[in-house]
Amino acid sequence: MNEEEAVVMGPEEARPYNFSRSGQISTEQMQAIAMVNDGIARNLTHTLGAWLRSQVQIALAETTQQTYGEYLAGIADPAYVCMLRLEPLSSMGMIELDLSLVFSIVDVLLGGKGHCDQAREVTEIEEAVLSSVLAIVMRELNTAWQTVGLEFHLEKREARARMQRLRPASKRMLVVSFDVQLEETQAKLRLCLPIVTLNTIHRRLIAVREQPRRDFGAGSARLASLMGQSQFRMALRTPSTKISSQVLRELAPGHVLELGIPRSASSELVVGNLRLLQAVPVAKAELRAGQVYAEPSTAKIEERAVLDGFMTTPQLPSQTSSGVTA
Image (tube, rainbow, N blue to C red; front, side, top):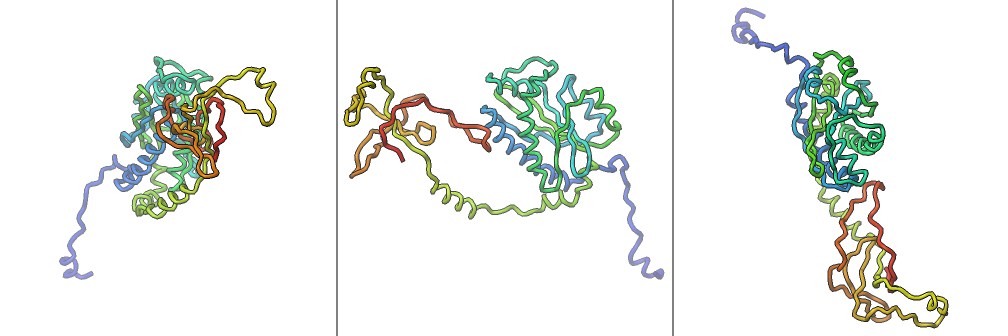
């Protein structure tokens, strides 16, 4: 390069470098991670609400970069913290639940209303009860992060004293906080992941952020069409009644059994195991039918979401059917 060319190009501009930011996650990566965690919060809101059969609200609160020592300083004592093994990178992270959330979940699963005890250690029985909820959380984590090839495995719970010896206090960590509301309990669920692991999958994280949103319009229309062809077991059930054992003994083919139910009494149209509407048995040509006219008179049954076979809808008491089925 001659002197004239050097003058035209000019010297390269030097910029200051902050070594304290070495190893931190870039803005692009943080945006991609936020998208992943937003999806986790939405899915957990639905799946945990259905599993616990309670009002659950989960939202992404914040995502921060801290040292491992700063993260440990923010953990309450006692705390419920389990180790996470991140594959295929053979790295270790953590999942932390506020004890108020742990006790509220256990109380709901045991038939309570989400009562939260004061801070104390979790018993082995309570840990066994909590395991079903942790399994759901892990499933949602793996579903969200599988797009970047990261898989989470739940390890054992760790005591705080041992956690301090797991890695250097200066190690950079990504801490993801979720706000959780279960009935009257407001608490935190936090993930602590090593930044070096997330930097390893940098390209795949950026690809997730730049991936165009899929248009589900045609798929939704097809799903609605297929659902419209679904068939459900239906019955028109008359009010229950009682008859004597003497009448039962005298029953024979051709006898007309008097049920003692007024002709004006309404029946219930039951679809699946859900009381849907009130109806009156009628005839239409040569077929039996039911004329719908009102909402069910019985107490409204709360609809329960059926989650991957984990739950079933409430069973109705056995009632006498008028014979109108479909």
